[in-house]
Image (cartoon, rainbow, N blue to C red; front, side):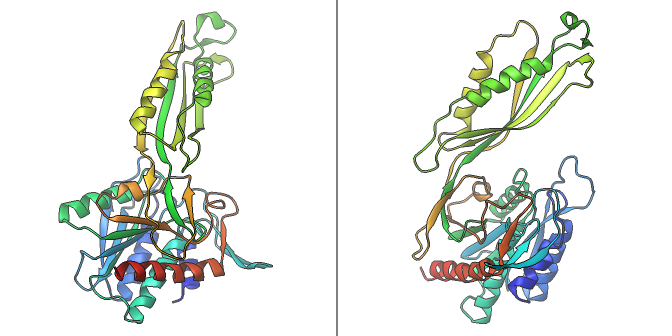
Length: 360
């Protein structure tokens, strides 16, 4: 099977975070049929998932040697909503569209094809490379965190790990950190015609979010500005009831500093606001510091990535390379696409990276 057919099969399987079972089964069967030794790793279910199927990482290697020199990895899950696979011809070549075409099933298809071609050419052998495809990257990194714990328990380490994310065929110098938090405002319900009898939680939350939106956190020359997105808001039950509770989920992408430093600043901003009535709570969730990656391979342009990846979720002293076909600018959009040429170049580039690292 060539990279285009493999890519089509993968994109044709819906694998929104929490529903990765079918695509994981497909990859496990595909790799087994090509004489890889395949293991699956059970990952805890996603809270609130709409199905009860297990979530599985797929770990594969040649022969019996689990502890290889290199690990090549990407994620199987995608964001919602599912967009079916489609092909169209335009002036720039054959365009392939659908959810996951770029982020990150283009990486998976290119990585597997690159490894298969190197095996066929006898350029790699048992002990050189392993493959890992994980769930949950788009939500909280649960798949990679599970894999990391299991690998540490087994004493598995690598000289280098090649992470697959769309990078426009550039090696990534690093990416921003992230801090997820939920802000909850508490008031008091009352009939809206008697507002003096209630405490409007929405009004409290609006004040807090206005301050958070204006909050300044340090940036860096390498990664640019630290940015904050107020992504989800909920509050109230009806237009004629003073809302007793309101909440917002916020993501701050850190270009500098640590999540702990940002948490101190966020708490200070909230505490600086004075409310005669009502109260506000902030709960911090998934967090990681800005990430540095290695780019010491000739022939590649370099760039930085604004969004997060699984790079910080795999613990160890390995070198870290981040590369993939396609552009992150179309990822997560309603026009997620890449081209046939992107996939073929992805295969060629992954082969170059693998061979360069194995030659050291």
